[in-house]
Picture 1 (cartoon, helix red, strand yellow):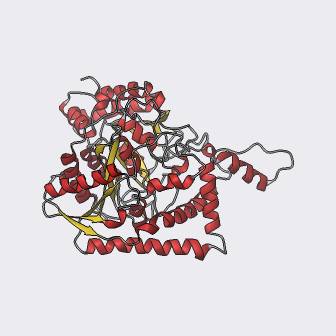
Picture 2 (picture 1 turned 180 degrees about the horizontal axis):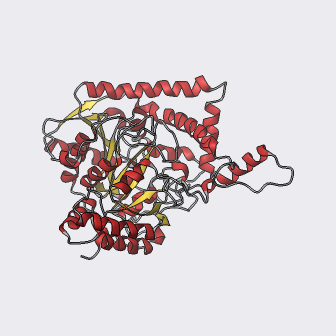
Picture 3 (picture 1 turned 180 degrees about the vertical axis):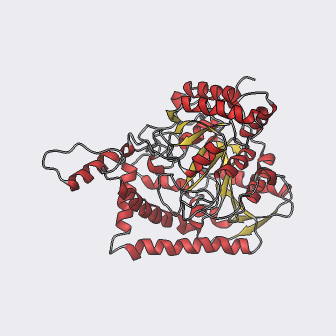
Length: 495
């Protein structure tokens, strides 16, 4: 079989079990694709030796008949996950040279299941960004192009390297993290599937923290079935993470029947934003029609506090970030600035953090420190927390009325060009998260499914939001939507 890197997880798993292909062959095909794709800047730390070693071990395991679903499947790992002996920098200069002596719980679960790590993937620095332009490694580039235009496009952020690598078939799937949309927005931009599970479903231990009450890991895959397979391996209770839920993990793949007859799908009126592009509006209406044709009942709903979600998020997330990032001080690990004679510890902190953090991280740390300061704590941070509770209650009220899932657009636009949204107006960039942040604030599961192309041939995604802990039902609804949409477009290879 040629082009083995173009397989999805389910296809590759079935081929491995049938003996049609080996994990080593799959892995070599991906490694070759990665080496030919430096123009995308998706993989920032390549680990071919580790990959081939794990692939050989996986082949032995498969021959022995002891192979979980992920065994032998080559994947990429976002640079936010600590991986033992492999640089784990969170795309920041301040963590230059940091090689952890331990493995994050999620990546360890993937290792234990026999998955093959091909390397670490590019991302926005400390996961702060929506376009992968804040990375210490430079921009990740989307494999997609607008028509015949050569302009480089963003793969979205912060999991931009993961999105680019999966879309360009450099790996079969990848890990991502989602604090305000960082799995779902890039998935929508590059025409792949990305799911953020319920907060607490995946352990956060060993994942570099951005905003601890919002961060959640999830898979980025070529289709919904693959998302179900990989998510099951990534989930599970972890005593090392106090927010990890002690709940059994169902077999998500077995729940993919595609039958959604009698399901109630909510359409929230508050997501009809002023100035929403007509293509997004049409895609949303088409998605609703597809689900209706599949037997679901469409119900107009109201989530009245939606308009406050973005401002609340951009108070809470920077506040938690400023607290989490206080530990990067040049004392214990990572980068330390060169000090002049006579410099003391204060100068060391100042110079190290000024050199080590990029502009966007500095901006968010300063906002966070401001809203947590004595005179502003109640005015900003406590008020934002109250708004967050109201947003959570909006969803609880809707689900209490029998709604099974909520359909919204995933992003306010298709992918945009790198450099088109300049640093001059960061708020423009923040608006990219307008449809996704509510899900993080409420701790709910959300999935982005590719559903169409815009007039320039770029992918557009739809988002489904599910009940807490009901990822299986959410994946099944997404599976029905995926089948109806029939999205099969791939980027033309230019790199």
